[in-house]
Image (cartoon, rainbow, N blue to C red; front, side, top):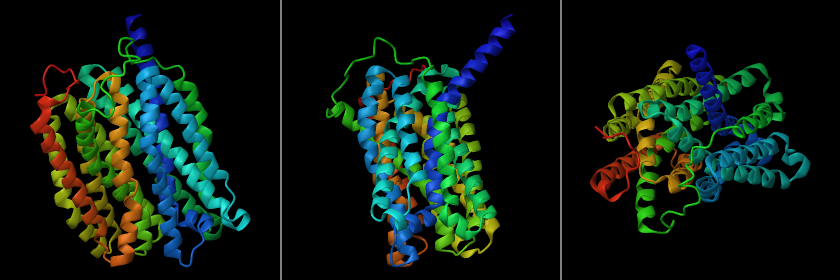
Length: 433
């Protein structure tokens, strides 16, 4: 009887975790396929004088969605800190699904003119608003629902879901680009992944409506420190800079790489998708392993510092291999190494950020720091890097951008070590070892 109850409890836990990570996975799936199909989206909705210009407009629309993230982080984050994590997660997945459906169904420029790019920009703004609250609420739920001995692995599932979603997006891109003729891919083939995402979202909403609430009644409704107060803004700033290194590495090495390899290095589309697929697989495996390392050793700052430092050291050599080797195997290996370094340190960094905020501000603090980092650096990385590439003609621009952002994260980590006593550390593990 006891074994049966344990099996039922484990199955229930898996179902709840699936419901939580599904929404975040769909968000990353949408972002992934948008990045992978940016070339064709640009041709459909952003007519321009050159192929490079419509690609730039398409990645610009991708970045626009990130400017709605801070608004979503504040509004949905405060909602989650007051009404509960469950309600915020249910709302965010519905909003994200609506934006995805608009992209899947919107007529092209040739049919509705300027309404086409306006609709795409509005859809990306809606997706960004939803994502702003989604990541904070889901990561917080995983953090708060886990036993202390498994908290790292439980939080790592947030990143694992992103990796699996990126894998699914890469597989979609690889399959569709391989199965369809170029003309069919440009006309309607790229819409297929967005339609799939929009159809899956209602399942996530239904499952989330039945999740247990992790926000304790004693914390619900508390305002905590004011959002403009020093006690909130100082840890928020540190958290945002910690996130910069990770978000830029993810968006450049996984999401931007297919377009970079296709446009800048003239590789076939299916080979560029192969690079993204390999990077996503390695990131997923390393993220879960990183969660295990956190649970086993607990050296959060050392793990995060090591990952950021090695990533910074590898930026230029990795892109040297990508640009000059001409060998797809070397390109895939270099990209996968960078993605693996990101995965190894991401859970420790997330745990550090979660520890900076009390429960009554945890979703808001985490979501807003994540949103600011992605808005200013991660989400705009594709547009900034593409613009700098066009202007300079230097294929090492992505490497330099990665290097600077990882150095900013290292500086934030040293600031955290220096000022730790001034922040409220809410991660109750007994010690940080």
